[in-house]
Length: 447
Ligand code: CA
Ligand code: CA
Image: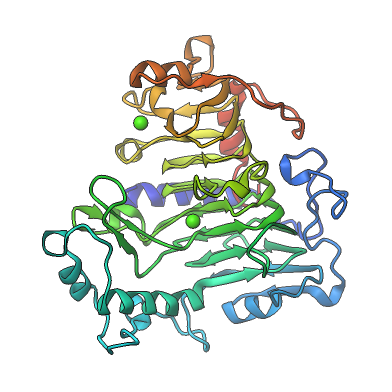
């Protein structure tokens, strides 16, 4: 997205926010009954996701910098707590709160002392001379050591029974990786986390990894998601903004013929996670939006990764909106929009991965003419999905499209459009023609 259009978008958001009378304190709220998979009642959480709503007064914190945020979270202390975020918290700061640049994180190879520099890294692993094997040796070790130094600052771990909410209109995290995961990295646990009214901006990796065999021409892959959900059940991500501005893809260079991608996902749900609702968020100006299931070989995810996505505004996202493996994922009443610039970078929206069970109902697409319905999905070892009620660029029967039939016809594929499960956790499905206005007015922070 161009800087001009991003500033227009932000101005619209800001105007919409200022039109609201006051900032409600939603810290004590819990998810409504039947509001997607995160409302699933279980023995541990009979009311579904409650976050830190039961916190005593000693465990309600208002924080405005990274140190105070990390101290208040007190991972892995599972005492119910409410974290109120006042203003913008930058994760890329040192212990005294001073900003850290990518240069500040550079570390030498621990074995040889070879210093890290991007120029030296690019010279060492250029496919023209290094070939197409994975980088190894002093500069790759220096890159990894540098990445570890950044991760120690930007990774912010969230313990169980926590609600994190913005309490000022600009409240949010810049450059942070909010990591919702228990101490254990096998199976899953009821983490019971609520994240609302926060703007997540510019989560970026200073040290992307070069993967020469990712795709036909290699790729730069980055590590940090704005929010990641791993080994965790009962997570509700609601009314947030997720976007890149200062580090947007159109500001990034190209090396080895590929975009030097410094971003990973916006909200990735992996590693046996379950019972997640992602609702009423704005996600904008980003390539990889939501990965649900990280690997075909992660068969422990089978029967898990149940996620609901509803009433989100997905604006100029490149791919993975979402990309699904294994999970039963209910995708309804979302607004997908692309500008001409966004369309130039568009891959697909629904990624049909191994044993995935996407159930997509009444979504609306507002896209340039070149973005035909066959482009709305792509197949990655999946065989079926259910799609109904999709409208493209309009509100009446003439705008109804069948993306699965269009995809099959355009690609000589045989994806089956059939429901493999029946969603029960939802509070009504809106008619598609109402989705654009409702979502544009009400998705994002403080709506
Ligand atoms: Ca990720
Ligand atoms: Ca395609």
